[in-house]
Amino acid sequence: MHATQVDLEVPVHSFMRRQPVSILETETVQDAVEMMAEHHLSALPVVDENKMLKGMVTVNDMLRLIQNAERTLNCNLAIYDENYLVNELIRECLGSDPVSSVMSTATITAEQDDSIQRVSKLMIENQVHHIPVVNHDKKLVGVVSTMDFVRFVNENH
Image 1 (spheres, rainbow, N blue to C red):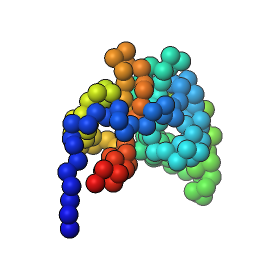
Image 2 (tube, rainbow, N blue to C red):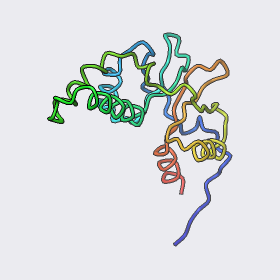
Image 3 (cartoon, rainbow, N blue to C red):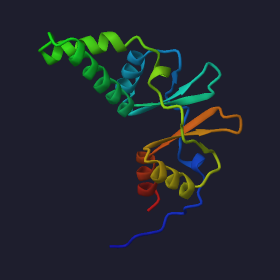
């Protein structure tokens, strides 16, 4: 088997997804769920009206939210035996909450000229699968995911 080396100093802007799908911090959890489903995404950057990055919302954030709500509902509403009723109740209760209430605000970011090596190290150290890319003003300009790394390596082998 022959392996070729990938240049680890390539800047992240050369393979990041530009103009990523993002969600406004004022939109709802239900909006985020629908956007993720429509675009087949597992994370969304959360921005303000000026495209300034405010955080990230991930499928894992949603799952934690549902778990916590289900525990609360199970404790307080023991009469709901059927899981589907509990799940519907959770959707109704949480779907209208602003996405800012579930997003991670301690978001790890990269800058456009950061190297592949630096960004991959950030992902490993912080155990994240998506890193928003911002410009010098902290405005969202792209996103890099683990899949983008796989695609880059595949295209450059």
